[in-house]
Length: 96
Length: 370
Image 1 (cartoon, rainbow over the protein chains, first blue to last red):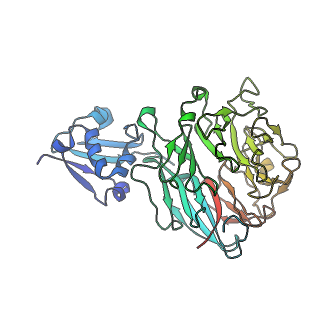
Image 2: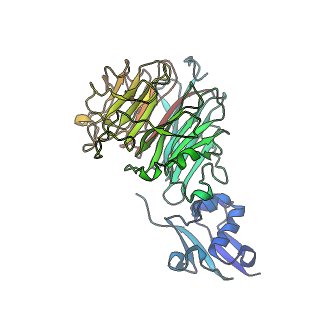
Image 3: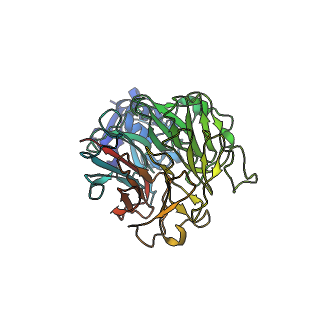
């Protein structure tokens, strides 16, 4: 089955049932990062709210890497995700 | 049991929200506390509401992570466990195009309106819950207000930071925002009118505009719900006519700048402020932290500093102060230097009950049954 592997940062594992990674069927989940997050959010709504605000925007100090590339330098949450990709969600450097 | 002043068998709860987490203290005497925390480590806690109206205790907190955004959580077991609604207690409806930045105020309504909890948020908005704070609805009257485009942002952000439902009339609510000033609704929140006549705005070309003032905090008098006290960004005021007009009550204070305003929960005419030198000098006067109390609605003020550490150059932020409902009333506040003080005698004497915390953003105190 064509899958995408989503790596969950330790700080967000309490809202993904403790899972370190989530495997999603890209065909079922859709083809963009936003679709992927929608699919995760259907099961883990708090995870979704941690990563995106209610307008659907990626939070300012949350970074998502697709196969090592910052998606903000790609097409943001509209970036298309191919089977076999790895999506890494991370908090950026911020705060004091 | 929380509101009748009979606290002989009570436990006192003190909740301290900081820039990096929440501390919860319980005490039998308001002198010795047992604290837990930090809860929500690395999250700021800018707002706390303690709801004791139905015989139990619900602690509601506004939580905000620099990374993961804002949310609201509540605990019905004094912080042992927390519940966060899956879809968020406060989220902007899609048609607004807005996103919640920070919850500045969580205010349970009066005892005869069980389940009603108000919130004030950034961006400037007021919210009402009828289920004890688990879900809030955006007040559209304020969100669609024609003044919205002219409201500004104070240094801390553009927020409705004060929400005061009137105990006398369920349709009357006063709010305050930075910047915008005081607004009042007398139709249950359907419409809002600015009520700033007499309040100065020294930072604007028009010294007394209809709105635009940077009112920092407002508190309602216990004896007359039409009497309110305001600590302004320069100026301390009282209204005797439900906000229609305000007059200065700053005479007798060492400075008219500050952030806090507290009113006695039962006795008319009693209020507390913590003066700060000036907009341009945001430290306590002479570096000597002091609370000031009036017992005559602002005609005279008494300086109260017994037990406060000297010197102290830290400010007390707008919600970092609270009274409880015991007899005598307890007064509590925390500084940006991370010291929290408690008084069990209406401010006549204080003792530090926590030191070394991150910046204190919010303090709330209550009498709870266990």
